[in-house]
Length: 508
Image (cartoon, rainbow, N blue to C red; front, side, top):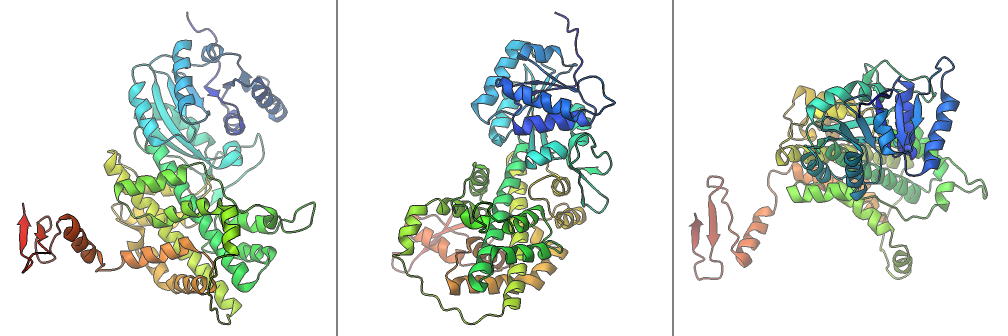
């Protein structure tokens, strides 16, 4: 049957918080949206918002609700573009199969904007290639970002990207010529100027992989901020409001970021009922949806050191042991020995520790992506990645421009720590990190990501590590062989450690 309607540019399946706000964002930018959700109340909700927000000079509805997938497909211009915002996993495959049954064609583009695992995206692009064009686009920025400008991380078929590019560039966050976010929170008044925070990242799962690493860095960044807060509160006795004011001050400098900004706001909020600091009434048991854990697992599988991200994941896990921690608090004794401290010096040390550790965390994230591009045959553009994270996303921060500059100057840079800017910053600020780690150890305050950042920095800058002894141990008990420092790389040797004279043999 010939499609006779075709009055919409894009379809949405899943009109929850993210789907609704992305649909309204697209409508603000002049695109007509056909929406479908199994929950008809969500369809009604987005249509009510569309009516309330529709500019007075627009007569025709910008968003239409559909009762079935077939009706939605009939409303879409070809090639059809359908965005999925459904739970990751089997629901994505179920919707793809239902779309195929409803009449989807091979040139139609299905875009998964959920938090899918990158390996699923790789599989789906290959599995559905004769029935549809499967495309991944990871979204960061939460509900406000989705409504007024998220960071979009697309990965999939390059031809499909050319069709999606105008829409994605329209609705993504924008930054000015200095890399600073251009923000708006006014429905119906979108931002058209500025550099869009989206760029094509590569085939199949590249977009979802980059978003996963983004979330791993996010875990680390959040934990580092929490440890800074914990040290300031425990060592200096500062109230949440005092720390909030201090974070406000820090947000005006090198630590300027969305996460520091919202932390400053959180710490200055009082509970409406009790008048107490709201943060003190929130249970100290952290949740997680898995992307940070995926990052740590992927890094481990590829042999990339990412201890800061891993420690952030472990810290969330430890926080959930609330009853055990309560028991341990009255059983285990921490012997501490903290001398008198100078508040100004402690503040300065923790500030520099937070910035130094943040640099190391981002360095680990980019190292993970560098390893992944070899693993999955991608060619990731690290300049683009740093740039699209400058606005819209959760880890947006002013120093991402410095990361973009570093990879612009040296595209094959092995590690951010080796760039002139970040090497200078760490030379200048590492004393603060060292002092903060000492303070944490002396006062019995857990600061695992600070400790891990310092260990990573010192390990990476060490010309010689005790891994020579480790290799000897492996060869002793398991004949795993070793290389000699005075022989060519790749030549393997084994010592017969328990034989008289310890004869050594070269292993071919």
